[in-house]
Image 1 (cartoon, rainbow, N blue to C red):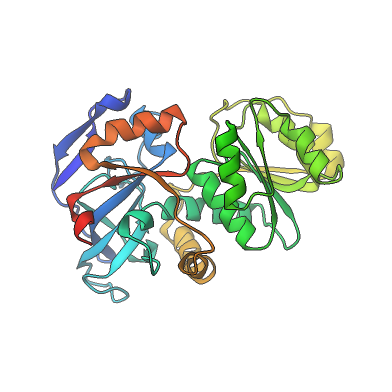
Image 2 (cartoon, helix red, strand yellow; image 1 turned 60 degrees about the vertical axis):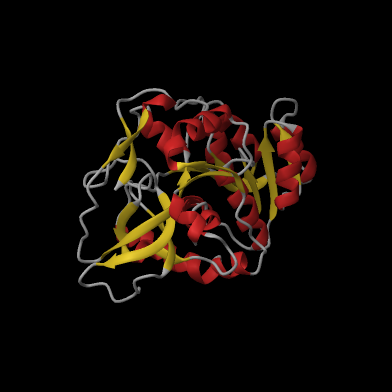
Length: 331
């Protein structure tokens, strides 16, 4: 099969076309004929040598795909050959075929193309796991997401808003802030020109928000704490602003604040399968009804992964970037 591999750790041009053997199929796996693969920040980190694939996973980058099932493991009875699916992977998405445990596949939502479906799994799994499971967001609580125009951000805004919460976001330009509001944020703040702590206080009668999804970390953590309501929770999913922070432990104690962090890739199949089941029950109907939309900023042919990564690192996109294969145009 054709694939894109990382020749060596480095800039986007280390992503090179390759020919690889078909993945070995486990007895509970399915083989997906890939039409499209989402591009995500962890792919960039892996390319730089900062986020290696977990043991047993493919070294080919790519954490989400959509396509049709081409082969079933001997113990799989939940899917049929030819079924259109999207799936969360541990790796191997930048290729014509990908193997994945059957429980990590979800049906392509009705009305969506395979390209749109490929933009969903990594962000939907991440948002549910961190906002609703780890941070245990409750009815009536308010939410702030940093990087609201990113792939994670556009999904977080839509999911949290669709489930009945007030949503705020930060983004790096007026255009991006407008996009966040269009997707469901009550207000979006330009972090280059506005103090999000001050703006959150203004818009919550000085109370603060209950949950913050933070992919920046660094010096944002201390500011997040000030933007939280009492008993508030921060869920850290990346550290684009640096991995170290100086915080006021006294404030955490006095106001019963919680800081948590997680990555999804290395979690067990059983853990991720539970999220998949919840997404199918709670979120997929909202996608099929059009309440939550797939926001795809741009597509690139598989062999042009280099330019997809260049655009991602520029931060000029709003929503997801997706790699496509010739198969996508026929489905």
